[in-house]
Length: 320
Length: 243
Image (tube, rainbow over all chains, first blue to last red; front, side, top):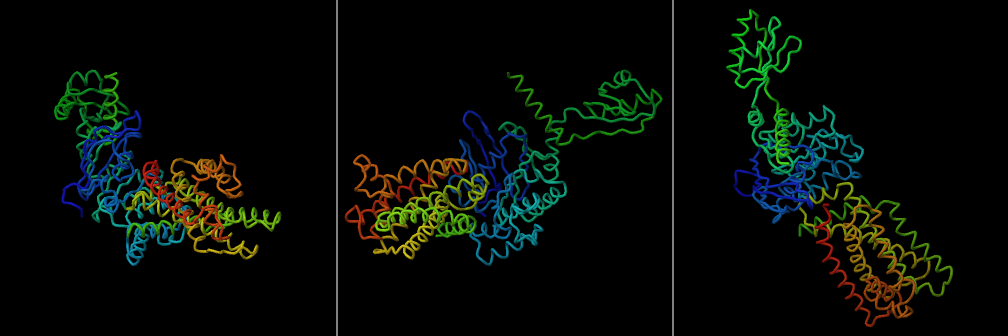
C-alpha cells in the first residue's frame, strides 16, 4: 500500500482541453478505499477523458491527480503497478488464447512463473472461463470477452480497478453476471471506479456517485442524497372510490397540484407531503368518497439525473 | 533490469503473434531471392557486387515494414493501449517492439545470405563485420520504422510514408550501384543515408572491400545513427502512441 491517505484517488482542479474544446473544467473528487465509486454522465461528459488521465494514458492540462498516494505523471510505472483498467472496448490480443493473454500480462506485471500459473488458473476459474483457456480471444462471445478483460485487469491484484462502461453491449444475463463479479471484486478489498451512463447499474452497485455534465461536476453523493437534492416536488398517487373534479380537489387542497387522472388514479404534485395527505383526507370525507389507495412515488436516480441535465440546459439557455 | 526483461517479453509476444506467420516469412524472403536470382542469371560473374545491397535491402524492408505494421495494427485494435496500461516505460515498449522487428529483419537477411552461400557460392570473408552490419542496421531501421508508424493511424499510411523514404535511398545508397559510380551530386546525399554504411559493412564482410577506409568507420557512423534513432523514437512514441 503506497502512503496512508484515507482516499485512494484524489483529484483537484483537473482541467483538460482538446484544442478549443474543454473536456474537463476544474473537476475535483476523492474516492475512498474499498468503495465502488460511480462516475456518471451523458455521452461526451468527459468520463473516459478522466479515466485516461487517472490511468496515465493522457496528460492533464492542470490540476492535481493522486492515485494510491502517487502522482501519475511523476511516477506512472508505480501507479500502473497498483491499478487495473477495463476500457469500454475489450482490448486484449485477438490472436492469443485466453490463457496466453493472461500469462503475457502477468509477465509484464512482474509475476513469477509459479505465481503466474496459479493466478491465471484461478482467474479463469473465477470468471467461468476455465474451459476456454486455449480458445483465441477473438472467437469468444462479447460477454466472455468482457469477463476476460476484467480478469486481465485483476491479474496483478490491483488496489483500484477502473471500469469504463463495463456492461455496454452485453445481454441482460451477461451484464448481471458481470455486476455480480464487480461486487465480488469489491468485497475482496479492491476499490472500483465505475464510469457508466446506466443509472440503474450505478444505483445498484455504487456507494457514492458523481455526476459529470460537459466536463463539470454537477453533484456528488450517495444515490439517495442525489435524489433528495433534486426532489423539489414529490408525486402522490391517489385512488378514490368515486370520481371527483380536479378543480374542487385543488381548491380544497392548496398543497396539491393535480397533474392528471388515469383509470381512476390521480397523480398529484405536492410540495409538502404531510399537509397534502391531511388535506386529501379532509377533502375525501367532505365529498363522501373513500380513499382506496395513496402512495408517494420516490424519484429514481434517473429522475434526478434528468432533472440535473434539464437544470443545466435551462441555465445555459438563460446565459445565452 | 526488470524493464529489459519486460522488453524481451514484449518482443517474444510479437514474434509469436506476427513474425512467425508463414505469409510474413515468405514475403520477407521471396522478393529479394527472386531479384537476386534474376541478377545472377543475367550476369553470374558480377552478382557479388550486388549481393551486399540485396541483403541490406532485405534488412531495410524487413525491419521497417514489420515495425510499422505491428504498431499501426495494435493502435487500431486497441492492444497498444492495453500495453500502455502496464507498468512498463515507453522506452521499454520501443525496445521490445524494435527488438522483434530487428530480429525479423536479421532472420530474413540471414536466410537470404545462407541461400546465396549455398546456391550461388558466395563466401563471408569477414563474418564478424557482416554480423555487426546486420545488427546495427536492423536496430536503426526498426527504430526508424517504429517512429514513422506512431505518426500515422493506418497501416497503409505507414507503408506509404515508409516507401516515400525507402525507395529514394535505395538508389543513392550503393544498393544497386557502387558508390564510386554515383553521379557527383548524389554522393553527398549518400553520405547522410544509414543504408549506405550498412551496405558497405556487408560488402566488407563479403568481399573484404569497401568504399570507406578504414571500413570500421561505417560501424561508428551506423552506431551514431542508432543512437539518434533511439533518441527520437522515445519522445515520438510517448507523444503519439496513445492517440
